[in-house]
Amino acid sequence: MTLLSTFFLTGFQGLEGLHGWISIPFCFIYLTVILGNLTIVHVIRTDEPMYYFHEPMYYFLGMLALTDLGLCLSTQPTVLGIFWFDARDIGIPACFTPLFFIHPLSLVESSVLLSMSIDRYVTICNPLRYSTVLTPVRIVKVGLRSVLRSALLILPLPFLLKRLQYCRSHVLAHAYCLHLEIMKLACSGITVNHICGLFVVACTVGMDSLLIFLSYSVILRTVLSIASLQERLRALNTCVSHICAVLLFYIPMIGLSLVHRFGEHLPRVVHLLMSYVYLLVPPLMNPIVCSIKTKQIRQCIIKKFQFIKSLRCFWKD
Image 1 (spheres, rainbow, N blue to C red):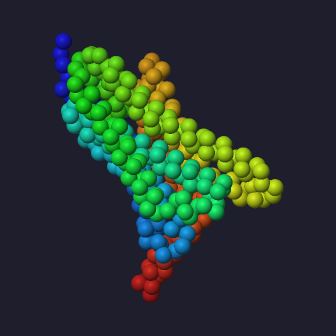
Image 2 (spheres, helix red, strand yellow):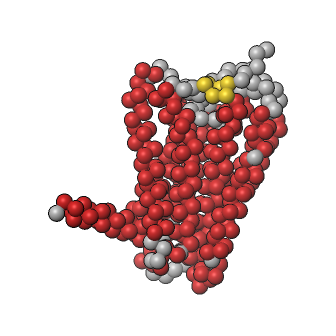
Image 3 (cartoon, one colour):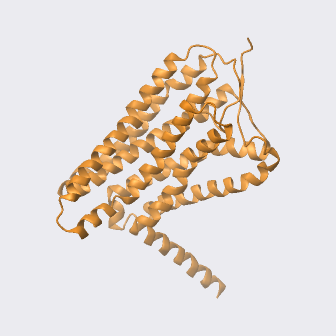
């Protein structure tokens, strides 16, 4: 029995000669993710004097943008390394490093989405207590607890993976390392890893998604009790961007989990595409949805572009 010391990351098999061309849309996606999320953070940070950016929802949007930015940067080196340099070999210890960033950041994003649903709940169902319930100090504490919870729950996973012996195929189905994928390559017992993984998912994503569902159930009941149709639509419209963010996060996550659990006989390209959708689509689309559906952020972005345009015209003159 030969024990493995390296893993083999997967690109688009059979299209190795086209990896340079394939990297172009990926570079565009990464650049859009970085610029889009940095723009959201910049707008919220630099326009603090404007009263509406003191609202908790904008702090949560900033947290979401930073989390998406972290997810993007944690996968960028290995993905582009495969396309540009055919750098597929990765040592087992080195594989655990991005894993420790990808999984906690995903859990932090789930926690931020839950916090945003609570913000919507308080806004619609108990607006008079909004300023006293969601204070800036409490929001900072929520953010720190989300990071701490995610880091502590994920911390045992690399150590549990490190104790395993790997003697099966060393080819991973993705361009980066995930706990479930690495665990499948072990030739020793993985019961503890399964239990720990399920416990982490149940305590974070499972609990968060349940609470989000319950909060929107109460929100919907409150909205339906409003007499005016126009007021109902106005209340629901404030939730659209958050609902889109929730769907963009949970649908790819559920899809990737189903492919991992039941798609062993599917082509590798399906696993690969689902992994890209899971980690690239939410960071790509969240700033776009946020800019389109959040009037204040959209107006600030337009003003900044107009200011830049006026400066260019000034220097030309």
